[in-house]
Image (tube, rainbow, N blue to C red; front, top):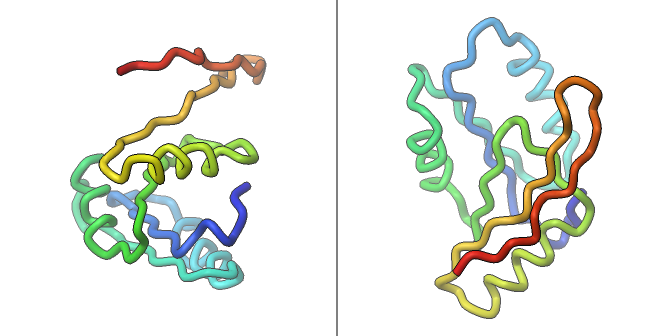
Length: 117
């Protein structure tokens, strides 16, 4: 859901998943079909969210980093607004509005448009 022109690479970090065969050969075969480089890092031991993100950031080659967790699904146009804010101030840290999908009935709820300073 992101225009390919905005992407340089995808880095996926598997934080020592167990019994997830689809995260091995099936995932690697799928990523080879994508039109940009995909790097899959596999932690031998569970490092946790932040250490795993740092591990991915260490090999990143792009100018701007975006972190997405496994449960995140992006809406069309999500990245353009964030990149616009970063372009205005390269020291900015930006965070999108996160909508919610109900676990029970898949109802969609728009997140708050609150701005924090």
